[in-house]
Length: 225
Image (cartoon, rainbow, N blue to C red; front, side, top):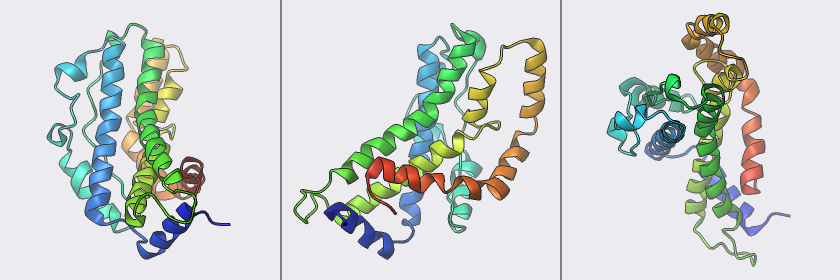
């Protein structure tokens, strides 16, 4: 049996199969910015003020926009059905951390965690956006826009947790190993091919990861899309 919320979401899902391009790009941009700022704030808390001193702990998009990754690539990929992009990475100096090994792990987790938190908040709006008597407390279009925000942030968190450089997942894996000179050389060698590894994931492996996103969407919102 469908709830009033799922009925509202389902109705607009079929009407609006893809989000308006401008809205999707804005959500993607600010979700990425919040992701990067989270890295910077946590790094600052753990002893590395690099991002703060560089003026990067701000929501001002002009401080974060990468012309290619934040504008051109998202527009092109949107027409292919998968909006992908990036912002300028927040500067980070691991040698400033009080505990480099655990610090790098926590900083890496902060980015995806921020996206999952956004998904959680807007997921609650969708989950409890109904009175339970066949009517919704919010308009169907508003709930649909919330669904896009949840979806984009889940996708961002999922993508960034893939354990290949330069994604956060790789930093989480790297933090499990002691920073010995030998291991750091191996890590540097792997990171040297990061752009090619990301392309391999996008072109060949992402299709196998995508099925996770609808599952997480239902966990956060209580409805399917």
